[in-house]
Every structure is written in structure tokens, then in C-alpha cells.
Length: 319
Image (cartoon, rainbow, N blue to C red; front, side, top):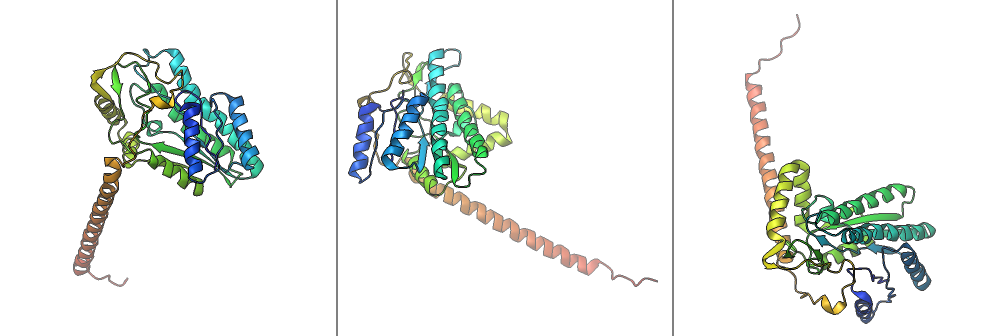
């Protein structure tokens, strides 16, 4: 098991990585901890070399580094925006290059890129973050097309909805209020489970969090209305308007020490508990409606056919 993580802005730093490695070893896993700036191609190549040297091969590579800058596009410093792009997009390019190169040598492998629901519909005040997530989806699709002749090499994208992670708390913030994950919020363990499933049974794209399907579907049907709805929703729900805060670079330019990240309770979030019964209930209602519609349609068809048989005159033989 390779537990590679990063020293890039937004990661836990060497101490946090070592804590994760220690937890994995306690669970019986072999680990390799290599602090790496994912935005530096030479460091990512060294990470891949160390992994192959230690484990003999790379079966699954996950690109998931991300940082966030919040604010109006013209008010966020260019240095912050550049670092968001380098971490969230160019870092994935570096990781993809290293992984695909090794996969071609092995003849197989699974690359999993963590995108976002914001890679299907934009959102205000996170323009560059959203742009990088669109870019990650495009990167995955393009590389997947390059590998059409390699049936055992798979490129997957994961699109999480809002997750209860420190990314909002540690974001660069130039909006003036404390940001937070807008409801419904899911546990990050759902993303981890999705990654494990994809490593065993790859598929092109996976949305994590049922609510994540709604914006993409709405945007495909009613783009203008859905964009207006997202703007209103994000403006109202993504900020704690009673908590004004000064502008900050957050962890975009400098790594956040592990002790500042805080601990998240591991109890399932409310939406994690509610989603399955709600989805099941909606599916049962949809199924019931479909059966009812089909039954009515069948009755109408039978009635029309019977009526037709009673009223249509018989065919006369040709003279």
C-alpha cells in the first residue's frame, strides 16, 4: 500500500504525513512517506521512482492535492491564483505524466483524479478553483483517449459534492466573511470509499454525494436559471455573514502545520444518514409512478383497440 502525500500548500506538512503513515502501519499496511511539492515535476518523478523502488510497481495513483482561493476574481492577488492553478491543475499534470509512464511499462494501472462537482458547473467567488476542476476533467478525458490502445490502463475522475474538510477553513479569503461548506455536506470518507471502489473496478467518472448530480443536470436543461440559482445559494450559504474576517493568503502560499488543521469528528454527518433513505424513497416513488403510468397507458391502449374492433367495418373483398 502506497500512502504518498504532499508538502505542497494545503497539505498537512511532514508531521501530518508521518501521522497518516503511522496510522496506516498500525492497520497493517506498508507505507512510504515522501514529502513532495506536486507542482514540481522533478519532485513528482522522484516520488514515482521511490514508490517503484520500494514496492516494485504502482497499481493505483491518486491525484488529490487542492487549495482554494475565495473572493471576486479581480480582488484575489495574482500570486494566489497562480498557486491554485499550479497545485490543482499542473500538479495533476505532473502526477498523470509520472503515473502513465509507469503504467505503460507495467501494461496496467489505475489513475484516479479528484475533480469536483464544480467541474460540471461554475460557482461565484471560486472562479479559478472551478476552472482547475473543469481542467482536471478535461485532462482525464484527453489522456483516456490517448490510452485507447491500452485496455488495462484506466483513467478515472471523482467529482465530490461539498465535503467536510479543512479546505474552506484554510482557504485564501478575500471576500470578507468566514467561508464554510454549503449544505448538504458529506463526510470525506465517502470520497475515500469511492477511490477504493475505483481502484478495484474502474469507471470513467463518479459523483460522490447524491446532491452533486442536481447542479449538472439542471445546468444541462436550464443553464441560465441554474447559474442564477447557484449564485444565490452560494452567496447565502457558503459564508458565515456574522463572522467578518480580514483578508488572508490562508494555506495557498504556505503549508498549514498539522496542529492548525484541527480534528473533525468521525461520526457520520446528518446528510450521510439521510441520503440513502431519501434516494431510496425517491426511487420507489419514481418506480411507482412509472408502473402507474404504464398500467394506465396499457388500459387506454386496450380500450382503444376494443373500441376500434367494435366500430371498424369489415374489409370487403376486392371486386
